[in-house]
Image (cartoon, rainbow, N blue to C red; front, side, top):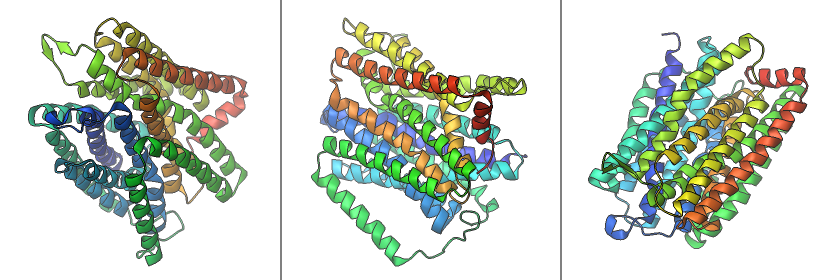
Length: 481
């Protein structure tokens, strides 16, 4: 098979996403569940803050994960270590009976995802080039794998959590990552263990590096122990924003040619739009989940299905709709009419804004009684269309807009948009009352308004671009950096 390496990397990411989304579907429900039901009995604001910090940590760790692979480990070793940490962290949750132990397990998972995720994405770009596969096709296949895993994770983990308790759901998530490592073992040997082009990997990192990492980890653990999570969440928003700013400043500085600098600036613009979108998408794990739990009728043919199953609807719609958009973009490209990436972002943000408007109407209706599952279904469908317009461009941006020799770092930097989005989603629990339908309506409406403003801004930018400039911007994502 010509695309064997891309398929196996997609399978690796499929199982990693199975693990991530299976855990994500359970987290907030586990945190707010009564102690008698095996949960932590936390209030909404604290539960959503922990969720936001975990999601942020997952993607924030992608930045040092990419840097360590570029400079020291190489991507293959980083993926092996990352996958092992993810599995270890998930299995540790099975035996964690205190919030501190549970938080430690989540931190281990975040470290593992940081090592694995950025480097799998970077290897997809290399595999596509080696197998003469168009980058857009490779990343579309990779993206479909992500969403197949995201469909299966909540279905399996939630079913086991209902049948055997929360711990069974966490164990299912850990098992998924082990299957991902099996898939990776079939392709790992085909990639030489090197770092960034032109820069050999240092097999033995300096002791000072490990000492610095240990000191930072100890400091973070102390801060998490002493600072309330709701305060920590706000501090993390500032920290991640400043980290992103510094990271882009580094990329601009290392860019050696004007064309490389223009690509970095395009990446910054896309990063801002993606952050707004991911703040809406991550509502699936917080406000949408609580709306499904408290205000949605989840009965079908007289039997109630688990709340977490709603989180499979969103990636299911992505898988269902993605082939149509692949066909559409190919057809429009053949006619030289494919929209620019800025216009795709505009349409995706506006579509997500409509989704949140639907959710707002559902929450207002819930003020007088439970609403049917179709409300959330339509919301997830429109959000899925928005993601299809935004996420594949973003996945490619980290690898294909990066200055030469900085692909891992650039990919990790791109994932900070998801980190910021997760933090902003977690922040909503402290700003609005998720225990009342009116509070959820205010939250959904606020996010929808932000999406609409961002979408209009991108639309104006796309319309003001000269045709030649739009084509150049779009073409820049088709050229490997």
